[in-house]
Length: 176
Image (cartoon, rainbow, N blue to C red; front, side, top):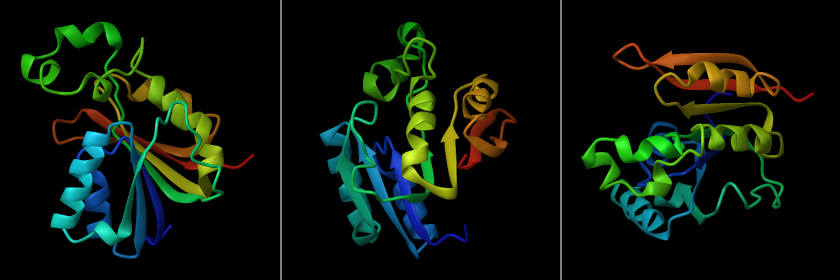
């Protein structure tokens, strides 16, 4: 890929990932989407503070329901730290998480894999051939996410965090 081109971030929240990518890859343009207007306002302010607001478009979007492919734009990289906590486990989370994080930023559906399935389904309309996807995963979810991606992506890899936990799953889009 080479680091130049277009990046899509699904579920930008405060914009930390989009902003970091824009700073690290100055030849890119990032489209960052989120369902929360409040999160998008914070993300846009953070992008201004870091001087990358001219290279990031923040869009309100319900990724599960809305289409991003209507405009025909394709991306070289799709990144996401999606909600991945199974719905039934949210009440058991640490208080500082469950009481202060918006539920929509945590709730990944019945098994926590709702957004991974949606990203896999929408990727063919969003990515260039050879485009990549990189997604953060929850504890013990990497194998299941690799399985979800297997029929659409190739060169699927997992990256471990500093504690040795499988934390990021990614692959390259293979147009069939």
